[in-house]
Length: 114
Image (cartoon, rainbow, N blue to C red):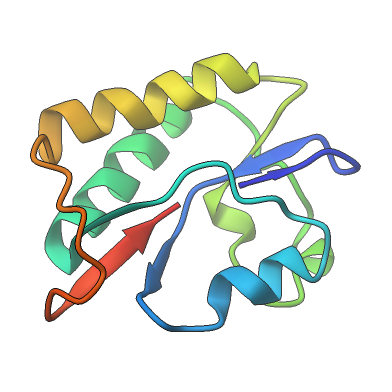
């Protein structure tokens, strides 16, 4: 997800059918990518991206008060990391940890990684 006004990008996990993405969109976030995979793989992809951002010393993209539905620790400043690099961080994690990219939302236990 990306928030142009806040100059931030976000990675996250949402259970298929939940309102989590819609809640973030209601505050100005725009969904860029969704994949469907197991909850375990979704968590691994998210951890991989967040660990990479942490290792690079990148700052959070927003203050907690700007995230009424939580998730500020899953953001990165687009002043510190270009959006193309954020996309590559995500794509690399998918290639390494969830190469099959399960594309069925109706699979039991599947999660969206956004």
